[in-house]
Image (cartoon, rainbow, N blue to C red; front, top):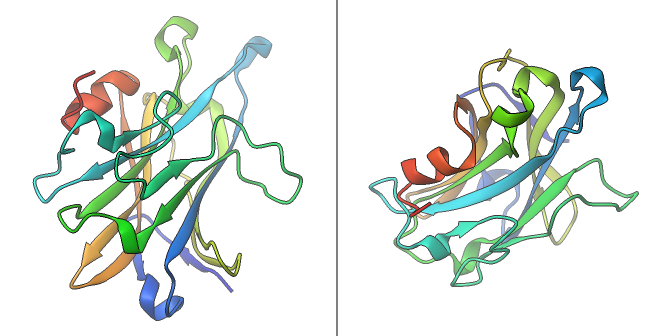
Length: 191
């Protein structure tokens, strides 16, 4: 059974899934914009060093760069259509091949063209992030975002954190204004 995390909570992957090498980070949501307008959400990942910044723009994985330069993080693409998952989007992380100088992998979701469409995360419900053992398909941990994010257009759902030779999955739930570009710049991406 998966561990359900609260904001700020974390779980050791090696304790909950001994021997885990690859994880799927699944993200889901149910947009409910007013007046039937389209609400386009996109996931991304930032491979971060100890200083909280990417080494290069190639460590920013999103819909225009589906794979990190080292190949350890891969985006499954925009919008999943598989009937076997409730995830809207997924990222696969090969923990054994994440470079040793990468200390965190932050996973975010942004609303495309949010300002122009007057949209924010207050129009999104049932948002979640989950960490799944890619080999056994067992859900290790899950974080259901339940706060009101009605002024944010970008949201860091969670992150993988390297700690003392172990990986931890942490529930973040931190909102930002301004969309993908300001969020990416905060992590050192030349956006």
